[in-house]
Length: 72
Image 1 (cartoon, rainbow, N blue to C red):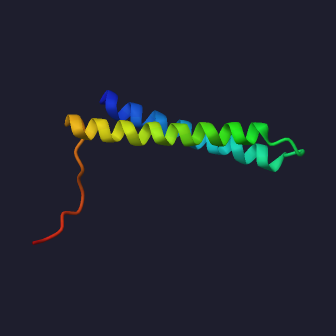
Image 2 (cartoon, rainbow, N blue to C red):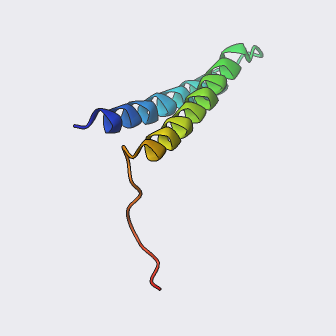
């Protein structure tokens, strides 16, 4: 597997794990939301990192968009 694709998949998995951790903390919340805020902060940071890496990989030519091409 291409290392770029592997990195993207790992970041997606980390984002989902962080979101699950935040959901768990929300469900067992006892009034202290520091763990919840920390989990959501990690998720936001990972999402921004993923977006930035996708943009850099696109500009470097490592990934190309594909899919439906509008007809002309």
